[in-house]
Amino acid sequence: MPAILVEAGFITNPQERDNIRKTAYLEKISLGIAQGVESFIKKYS
Image (cartoon, rainbow, N blue to C red):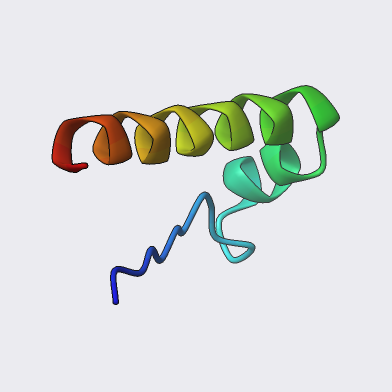
């Protein structure tokens, strides 16, 4: 079964940790993941 592991940032990196706290950043990451999954499904279905 296909699976996805997404590491959108690391809390040990101060800049990435600050980004993870921002709603706009999380929404941008979430949208990118959703679009990638949708693209994969369209291509391989």
